[in-house]
Length: 407
Image 1: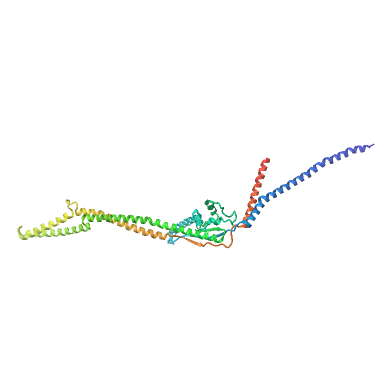
Image 2: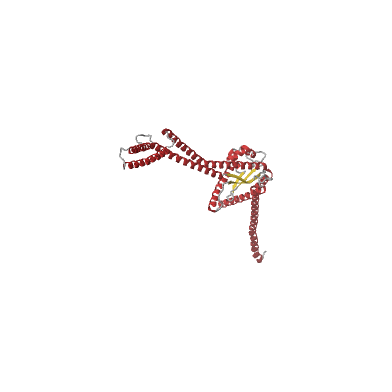
């Protein structure tokens, strides 16, 4: 039989066992949750490592293999040139400053024009025709990523050309830096020298065209002035043949001098006649002789006057002089216009000679002794950084999408 104390203690023991039994499952749940969290964390770590390996390490390794053992060496030739003018100008004062600014602007325009020509399709076409540019970059001995596709069109080749030939213009010095890449040092130097030669030919053509344009208008004015002067001279010759007079002006001047001389003699004869009549009769021999002299001289004066101006004759000296006067005025204006045109032509030729431009090579194309492209270490490092950045951005975007989906 149990004592009252035992009976009293039994329920107490039973409640203690119940408490232990009730407390045991939460501890096991906590341990299980911790294990699950650790498993999830390990799974996430493994997935992260796999993603880093696939999206970061794998591209880096592939780029390392490509740039380290597959990528073909490329050699770059450097040269520097500028466009100069032989124009002489004052160096002091405001005129020299303004002339320097104008000349500098023109030279910069010429340099930019040459740069555009270097990077043009015409340059590619000539390089390919004379130096086999496209064939060189289609060489199957080069790696597939570096070379030009065998089935590439001319437009594809021109786009590829823009990645192998560079022309950078410096606004401070006005010089153009030319860089040409090729798969061999000799080819890069050859292409660079050819580009400079073709550019110099283009500058010479532009300069020659400018000189021609400057003198073309002046030469056209000279031709017009020559034609006008020739027409005026022909008109004068026709009038000389028509009126049978070489110089009507000289003839009229001579006739006027003769008439003036006769008028003087007439006045003198009349004075002598009046003097004789003052003490002699009209039928005196001396008076008659003086009278006849006056009549003769008056007849000569009238004849010379009719020679100068005679309304009854349409081809009189006055008409001839009027015709010749218009022709002579036209000839004089034509002569002055011709002289002015010749002066302008000489000035245009002198100005065109001063405007001569030429391509000045500051640094001749170099022949590289080692490859400069591709930059292997920098390229691999760039792939690593770019892959890591892209992976980070993709991870953040994925996390943002999942968080948005939970909400």
